[in-house]
Image (cartoon, rainbow, N blue to C red; front, side):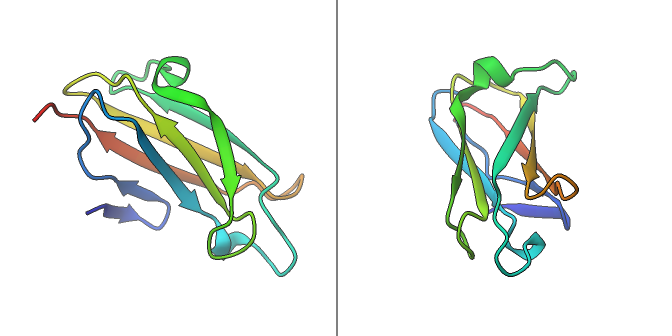
Length: 111
């Protein structure tokens, strides 16, 4: 069960280091009628603040239908380190002036 920390931040369920895990955020509440997410920038850092995007994110972010058409950004995580807490920042582009952000925290523990 995910735990909400704030309106824009959530701690996901614990995952195992070897799991391949899709996680995402639905930006539907940020979209006016007719708007959609057109791009997304994702950054993944470890507890020390080191950028782990290229090693932990499998492929690139995808934009999918959520509560609205093209409102959800999904990333797939893999090859994670046991005992780590990853901070996944998703910056969605809706228009040049509208870029909502979400923060997800992913705890990793080998069970």
